[in-house]
Image (cartoon, rainbow, N blue to C red; front, side):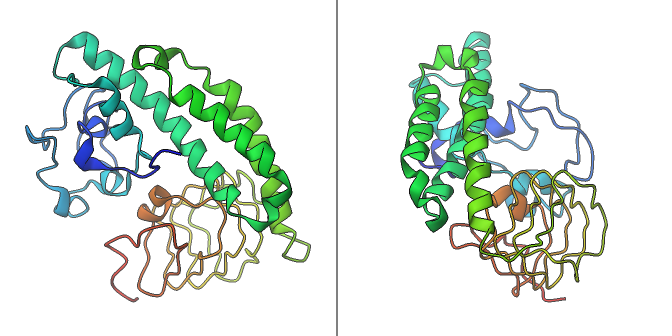
Length: 267
């Protein structure tokens, strides 16, 4: 399985060029897709990386390409997006596709490590192989990769595994799939084993919450208050989700995730 975390030292800064940015709480500027960020250096580095949050770019600070950037850069060989319009278009299209596929591989790899998924391991390995076949297509073919064909079955399998894992928490378990929980005070909510897949938790107060075995797939945690919360046993939590939230030294995270640099001050 490829490295599923960003390796910026081996990437042509695709995330700083390919996506469009919209001036918002996440980005301090508007930037069209395919145009380099004004802070990008000729050596593919961010000139303001250590000050991203201070300068109004928390979205950049939290971003993780799941390793798509270095994979597409390696596949391009001697070329990069500066080589010409055709090369740029091909790399940007491939980057968008591979990021989606690598995110799916991230979830599948986490599922493989779950005891609850032991009986489904053959199906998981088959799903990994199917996703990897798409991600391994030649650079010029990636824009036409059939992501939906592998994502649908993989998502269904991951939901089955989530249900098996969360059965370790006695029923009833909170089902807030896709729920609008923006700004809600959830400090006393029963979140152990909760289904929070796709929930909007923007600015939610989760201080001190126990989120053991909560399914966090696709949950929006931007600005969520995680000080003192226990997410060490949360399911399908990503680096981007954690990086977009607010935490402190008391926030417990899964071992596979890095502690964001702004999780420093205890409130």
